[in-house]
Length: 284
Image 1 (cartoon, rainbow, N blue to C red):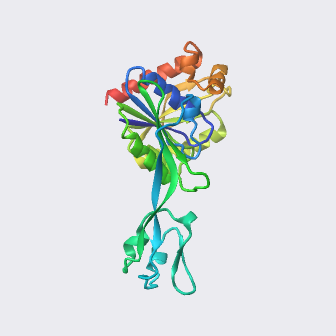
Image 2: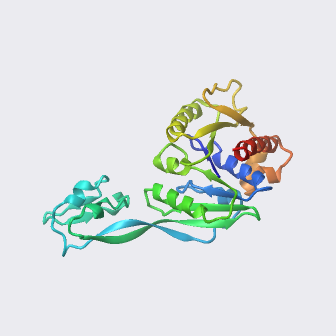
Image 3: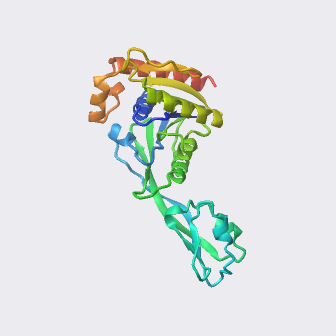
């Protein structure tokens, strides 16, 4: 079973919500927390967990055999990323930073002049947070621009971990790397904040969830930031997390607030949200 924690805007507290919910649910179940924010993974920092069991993630890269090439230019013409250019002599040349690894060029080549090569785009890690909670992390290689393939690799790696529930902590935004993390989830927890920008980006992520046919539930972080929060239509609110000095301190110490300050107002709200999620997850 999989659920996602997402939000259109960066900095709304997705990781905070994901980590604390995972910590609570792992008290009674085997839980895998998947940090799919591969461009800026921080769940291991916020749980003081050392990344371990590294595996490199590779994608296809074409290697041209010029002795077989007929200069037909089908590889260039079929490349949707415009990653292949042609020399004046008619031979193809790859622009590596543009290549998505889709293999279309190899499939259309009539002369079998394109061979398999690969490049490392990042790494995945599997780390034990505690007896019941496992953290799977994707880390994009510095300078690599495409996060989508690594999100898929991270999800695939998470399937090797023993669990009763996967919680996917996505990147911000609504790009294909976010969709890749959310796709197939039972439902998504959408984290936002009561600001005009938060509301604007919330509408974008709700549109993405509708396209993916994934139901969303709203968690309002920093709910008391303003006196008159905006009204959110079309999604059920299952939690309102107040501004909290304890949460800030938990950031600094690298421990979930539900462990450091179990009696705080934020921890009580996280426990209430987790009870609601348990009902939603295990009643299905």
